[in-house]
Amino acid sequence: MFPDTLSRIVLPLRQVLVMQSTNLHLSATNYAAVKKTTSAAGGVMGLGKGKKKGAKLTTMEKKEMPVESDPEKLVHYVCGSNIYTTGEDVKIKDDSEYPEWLWSLNTGRAVPLEELDPSTKEYWLRVRAAGMRRNNKLRSMRRF
Image 1 (spheres, one colour):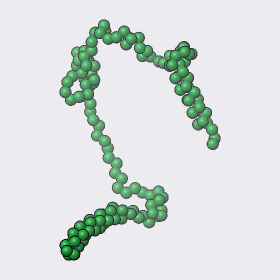
Image 2: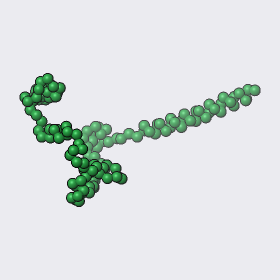
Image 3: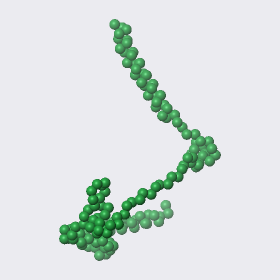
Image 4: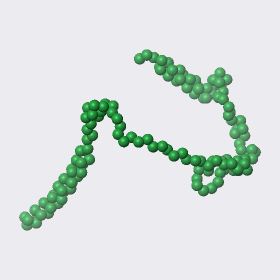
């Protein structure tokens, strides 16, 4: 009865110890690599400025993008709107099929702050942004 109990306890314990020693060995090798430099340019343990070894400059290849030159397609389609490999670009519709607010959008310069109504949210967002720009400018001009 005693040898049977001993074998049930010792054999699994032995397997656990072997697995732990294997894991310790693996983890020890992971942390063992230490870079040592003693050159004058590198300073003590590479803390100073030194030459970088093996730094190679590689040039990026320029990717040539196709440009649509067909005048019919340029007039009737929004070229480049299809981002998928299949399908076609969005077809331009008649002006009457688009909503009215689209034609009243401001596409030029932003309206000056003096011309905005102070009771609108846009006015106060612009005032806040102008105040932040002013504070940042003043803070950057401080000596300390």
